[in-house]
Image (cartoon, rainbow, N blue to C red; front, side, top):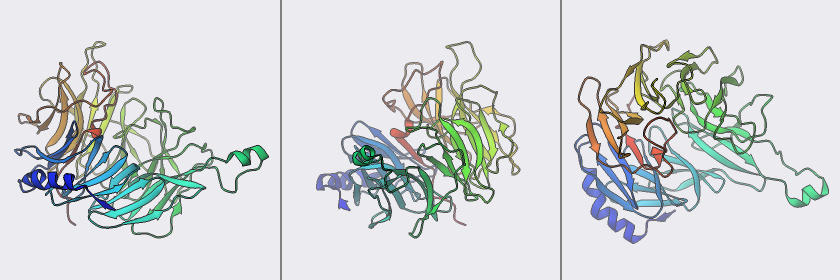
Length: 414
């Protein structure tokens, strides 16, 4: 692993350390403006420059809130928010994810699955071979295992010319492996699974892997693929016939086997990973996206396009309480100033909600909301990602996660 260049370290030492000691009772934001990465404590902190570099994207907090990972072009970097240092992890990284309870990070570097503890050395858990490469990664809720897909190599031209099959399987597969190293285990896929590469979408708290199983490669973004729960003794369980590949359309509950998902473009549903009947959260056919559970698993937020004349509807955040048995209560709007609400994220207190608001001029900002209280704008300007659509009349996915991430506070200790 290579350290940051001297200039980057100097910038973090001079600028990043100023924000690390600020109180953050409601968590912190990490966000990108131009070629700069900032951090900001909530609710009353100021933005502090953490790092500078070209092509910065996808800031992501570690569980402790002491590190921020980000892409710099294709490279993956981690930065310590007190300004004391950082690491270049790999020059070519496709996917990465922090562990849920500590500062380990898993990433796919040129087909290799690697796990690194922040500030330490990396260990290759799955090495790329001429036959196959790892793709996608997701941590189990307890941080003990990782799920990933295997993409088989294409046959070489010589094999195709001779009519001979290559000496390795051409069928994609889905695996889990202990996060501290060991033998991987292939998950049983449906017998009718067509050879598209699975897209891992997380784990349930009771240890099932959630994945989209496409019928073709690449996965069609406009139509999505069936969602399955895999790894149970009863075999693969279909949860939805069509789920789009955008992030935040599949959200396993923090405890138990319940999964919130968005079927197609909508509506939002609650489904047990055992494959039982779905419970609707919203009106059939209503466009929805961006599901988010509160840390205690008792409340759920999502974005929905309400019923209104064509072209005048504005996407808003809806809330519901979910009992221990999985039955949702009545749905209610979050409220707040006019504009498109998006990207809901819960604070550790299970009450405050951080979200994006886009006004009628297309200006995006970040707000902190609490039911029954006046919302607060905590970040004045957040430049919409490239390709973001209009502020009303549609509910296209906007990749806010390319520019901003929220740390809700340290994970609960049991």
